[in-house]
Image (cartoon, rainbow, N blue to C red; front, side):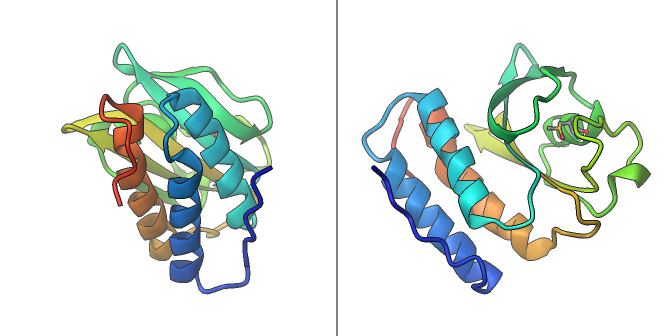
Length: 168
Ligand code: SME
């Protein structure tokens, strides 16, 4: 059993530090990328309040393919440049969207989603996956959420590549 206690009322920087440490501990010594992404999706769900979807899309042959996640079933393949996730892949930059209804080309996997945060995971200069968080609350994510997820993405990058160790 893995028991992590998440104080979801903590200030965001502290919350994301705890999430980061838990993710590092949970993935330590494990080389299977799918298992690591699955456990980290579960940790994000446990630590970050107010979500209706949390998970990964992996880059396969230049497009995004659904990875481990928590939430309703989602679209499986997303082309580069398509929707919020595809924009993160095409640009290599975090996409912080307060209201997905205003984002051109947004892909609605869950009609309840209103805000979205997508952070690319970059390894050796290439986007290898993205972390995608959705919330039913407009404006749910801010720059502190983005910074916390970016730190997690930097930690995860080697876990999805050949080195397979936690970058602390
Ligand atoms: N809304 C995303 C699609 C993925 S789901 O939110 C899980 C997008 O526009 O890329």
